[in-house]
Length: 103
Image (cartoon, rainbow, N blue to C red; front, side, top):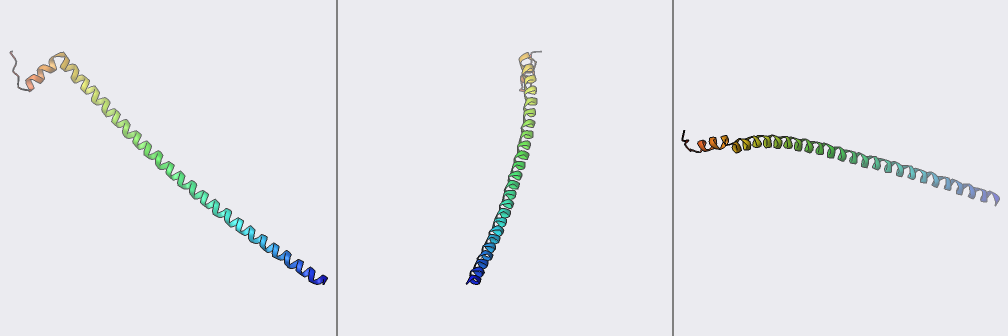
């Protein structure tokens, strides 16, 4: 009977060891899958961030070009306005429209 009890204890120990090995494998597989998913998620976030930065940079450059165009247009229009306010511009504009001078 002692031999049977010893055998039963040995079988139970082997079964427990087998279960703990299976648990360890499942934990290792789960941790690996979790790590891969985390790395993939971080990679996707990195790509999205890079795309947003590039898009914002292009938009900023486009806006700066527009600002320069507007500044140039304003300077040109201010010069024209000064000419019209001086009278010379009004005279030339009137002649252009078909008015005849008394001179």
